[in-house]
Length: 278
Ligand code: SAM
Image (tube, rainbow, N blue to C red; front, top):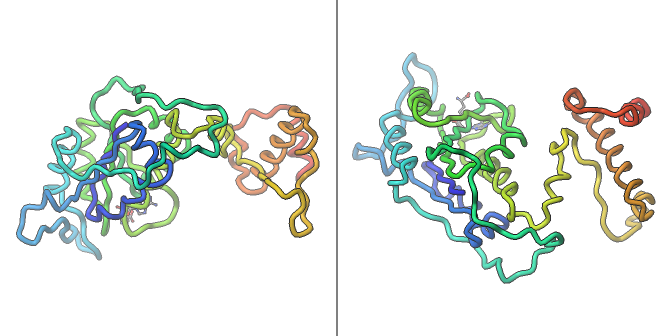
């Protein structure tokens, strides 16, 4: 997979070369290009924004700068900076290499050789785990990081005539710029590429994968500050442990995000657990 990010703060994207993403870069599973939008500014001040039509506070990012930038990056003709991995990871054994999922050459699930353009904006569709799953099959994703009051809407409208464009929000709050949203979205996508997580079950059992929040997790010691790990986890009975985990996931989801339960297929046993938790 190739990720390209267009931004006025290239250094903000440095975290994309650390930890698991850095390892994916080393393995050749991931390439990350970062592009300074100001490289496409044409005036002496390298300006990328202007005052909004219709008045109002703040500035809007200019279409004449964003348009050519996205065209060049999407076509692969922009130079930009390709991120190196921050650390040598390959020689180090991984704590979760239990199932030994081999890294493999990236295979796209998409027929299109045009990139997917993701535009983070608080006014977009909520970004979900289902999006991350679908986009983990993409070959090339371009991210456009807005700042100020955002990007002139015609940039998105124009791009939508040629590429697949998704305007997405990472939550109901307003950030200063799109870079942090890109870090969130990129991390959620890349960890789902086969071979990036050593143990595939790590993400198969995560929150949202089955529509539920994940229940609590415990490690050694068995008793800590007087608090005990639930005894069922020492039973050695996998069916019992699985049932306990399902029950905990159901009860936590009911307590914290009850609306998620509307989209989960519940067995009579699940329903009984939920009724007992009311
Ligand atoms: N005027 C915009 C609005 O009210 O919808 C907010 C612009 S915000 C200050 C600047 C940039 O931050 C946006 O263009 C977007 O790139 C990013 N951003 C802010 N909040 C976001 C969120 N919740 N999800 C995704 N991107 C966000």
